Figure 1: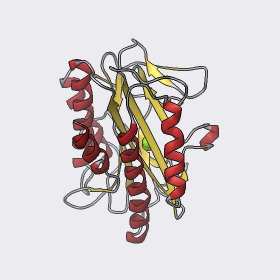
Figure 2: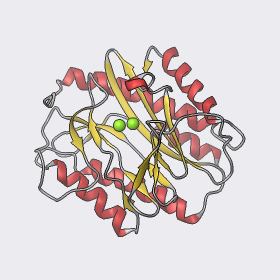
Figure 3: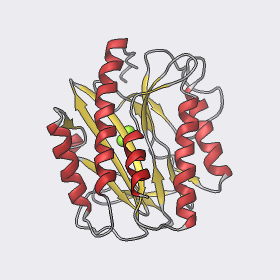
Figure 4: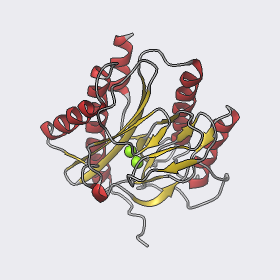
Amino acid sequence: MSKIHYKSVEEIELIRESSLLVGKTLGEIAKVIKPGMQTIELDKLAETFIRDNGGVPAFLNYSGFPYSLCISLNDQVVHGFPGKHVLTDGDVVSVDCGAVLNKYYGDSAFTFAIGEVSEQVQKLMRVTRECLDLGVEKAVVGNRIGDIGYAVQEHAEKNGFGVVKELVGHGVGLRLHEKPEVPNYGKRGSGIKLEEGMVIAIEPMINGGRAGVKFWDDGWTVSTIDGKPSAHYEHTVAVKRGAADILSTFSYVDNVLKEKK
Ligand code: MG
Ligand code: MG
């Protein structure tokens, strides 16, 4: 069992740079994502953008994953393959992106609505993003890992949605996935103590229906057991006193989506 690697201030700044590149890459996705395009086009764009900015796509070849982005459509939860699927009005698309810069990883995910999505899907997206915000609020010194999971689970279930439990958030640093695990469920005051120097990816995966998932034969794709849509938002954050330091950012995405309206 590997131990938690507590980061220095300098290391946290390096993770901030990697995470910023991921945030900018998601912003580039936001600019172009629209009905009529194939999801593989988004993957190529992300790979080119990350490399042009001196980084390396973190997911490409990670345990054999064959793409730079995880693109998970509709009932797919996470780890979907980009491909020939042509985006259509009403699709809900989770885009998960990781980049390595100066040896350090950044990891962030955002869920996009293609054209007009149903009110239920809009609610699912809003609530999942709120779950992320509520989880991040708990990533402060003095809390425990279970406080994050409790906040996420409580908000999702209160709204009638299912919390995916088979997959969890994680530490981030010199590796994409480090200790500790960061579940999206839990009990208040349980689990390891959150301490200065911990950098974690908080990533609620919330299903529009039941919590259950199935794992595909491709070895990667995870989808909902009941075929209902799923949403996924993720930030890389440093645990701090008072308030978490959010190292990744949705500001690029949000600015683009605001202009598109
Ligand atoms: Mg991710
Ligand atoms: Mg992650």
